[in-house]
Image 1 (cartoon, one colour):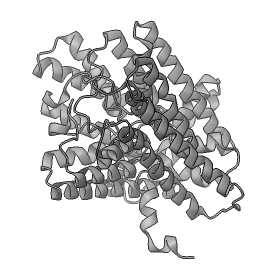
Image 2 (cartoon, rainbow, N blue to C red):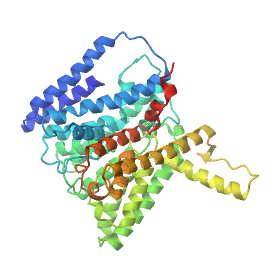
Image 3 (cartoon, rainbow, N blue to C red):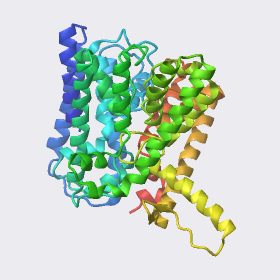
Image 4 (cartoon, one colour):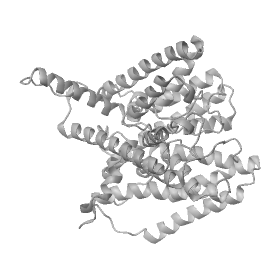
Length: 470
């Protein structure tokens, strides 16, 4: 994967040379360095013996994300756009985890090669680095399903459709690439330049949210904004479901229909509420209110973070709703962050079950999903992930406040980083950035991004003492 990352860095030479931004030396050096480190490791360890210890899966997943984020920071420093390693790591981690938080107060002065690299990190990490490994590498000498389930946020491990894990991942990767090409084509047909279309598609199909313009999506035409909104919404749908739709395997869709209905229903209800709020409390016309709510609600629910307006000035209840929607996220098996719609739906139905049990203690009221009872194992996992999510947010807010960040920004940053939404509250919200955060606060936010992308448990399991015992 270091070799793949090195080749991706070197591909940024195309805009560097085409636009003549003067960064070709830094891009070449960082790309060759990354590529050669990966090549040397491959040569040195090509005959390493096979290992099937499940603990190695968790260790590999965490190390791949950390190492690739570290190497991803090199182009920012090699080209001179960032001089602080902490800032470079923050930007790289935000890109690799498709979070969208940035330390750049203005991105329009950045060289074209760095703009493309920011977009590529989000496209690269949006699908899931470990899943790319499974798709590209035929044999790893390790249990592939262990890796497949260790990185839960990039794949739907609740119902594989084929016996081969690598085949399943390749199918979803094919859908991911197909959607990318489709929306680049649609944006170009709408009158957008190819350069803009590629960058905007990369960052929105991956639920990332980085932009090559300071005003994000607000300068786009209305048609282009609707196209980007569609891209964001599709990126929030389970990719295995999209594959089955494209291949006409209708019988395989019934296991995810309730999750899809909940995802679409939540989006529609939230969009209507936001449209009414913008029209009645913000003075927007009905047409503008509808457009802004359709696009911005899609961005928030899919934890993309792209903006069609400076939402930091919107009505406070709308901002509160956006926080709730970002915590929910899209469907399991999509590029989105958050808890995922499936888990939220299970939690809601579990609360309903407990209330019914209080009224009818002798009745049998199982939690059902797609008309089938939810297993106690899955129910326990959902509740544990929810509790760990809340605990990480509380701990993150406390640590950020200890770093001198005020309460509002600490809460916004912790939630924005763990969900992968990006923009926080206060100065870091809307079209703002995280440049004013202290060095310690940026490192804490980088850790929260990684925790959110790996859904906490994959990283926290490494801190259990028994993990390191023979």
